[in-house]
Image (cartoon, rainbow, N blue to C red; front, side, top):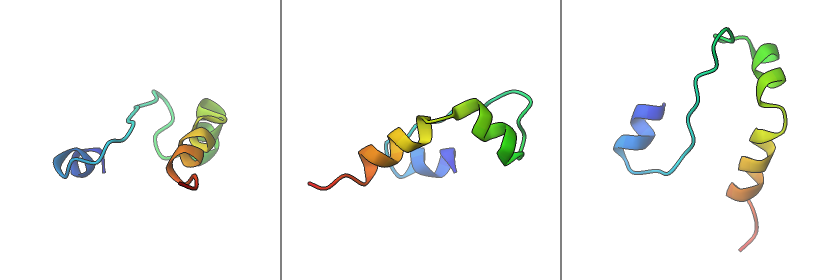
Length: 46
């Protein structure tokens, strides 16, 4: 997904977190509230 977003010029964040793989529980422990902040910026009202 990172490569596609970069190719079409969409600004985004990208991080690889060692030891998480595709385990959503471990991912949630690592990123904590970071994704909520991203969603808040992306979906705020004009």
